[in-house]
Image (cartoon, rainbow, N blue to C red; front, side):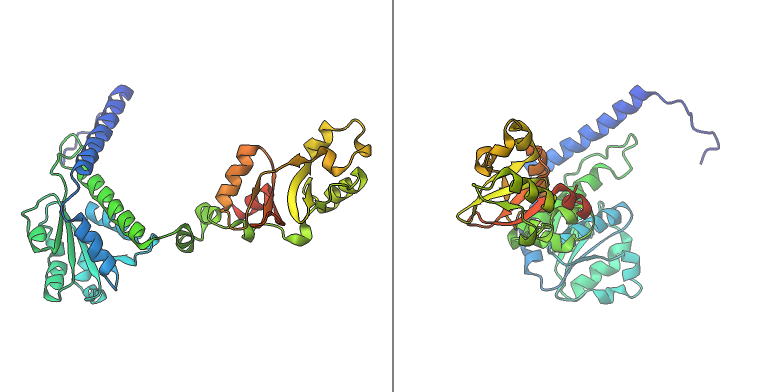
Length: 327
């Protein structure tokens, strides 16, 4: 290594040009792979779907980092998966791999020495093997049951050596496998929430019924109710609205805005005189994220929750979503 310090001069235009060049090269590589999906892709999906065990993903270096992400994506979308460090596999962790599993081994060259023991193990015990590499004629690809060949394209770095294009292609191919398997399994939003209960994403996948206030909290009024009682209902329930019900169905709501718009002679009016008809509503099984989007779109802070017959069963305030971490 040279002892000469690097030139600290920074040219923003040069940096921008380098960034754009890398993105364009990698985007073109992805387009090339999309135009000619690796042969064997469908067979790889079938192998994963047919496995009664897990998907074991392994690789070394940058391929290992990408492999960890592929394993995590598979696991989070309904396919049991683990990442196995190739070096640890050679020192006892091969015992994690069973005949019920499927292995995905990643090596851009297809000749990564550290994968040798794991490769031989899959062949000895007939563990189905999917290989991802840019070298179709490599040792790894020739041994695999299902070789997936990446387009053999230059790396995006200036010296053409740092894994850039190849790792982007591998990651995208892993995503394609995971999504294809996910869709084949019929993996739903409910399933997704099961594996993502924490954080904002998990909160957005909650259902309205988990956050709403129930029937005891409903600020109900009839169409003939006078304004004195309407105001008492709105004040006592503290949602800033009254829900007008006729023959068991929600037919309108009265908000603070409705009161202001009808302030002249307000106390002489009935609920039906000022209610906003056919209000926006949600059902108990609406996703919390969808309810939030509706609140933002309509610029309101409260939604009535109704059942399939249009009967009010709950009320949802934006503060309920904020407390749950949805917003």
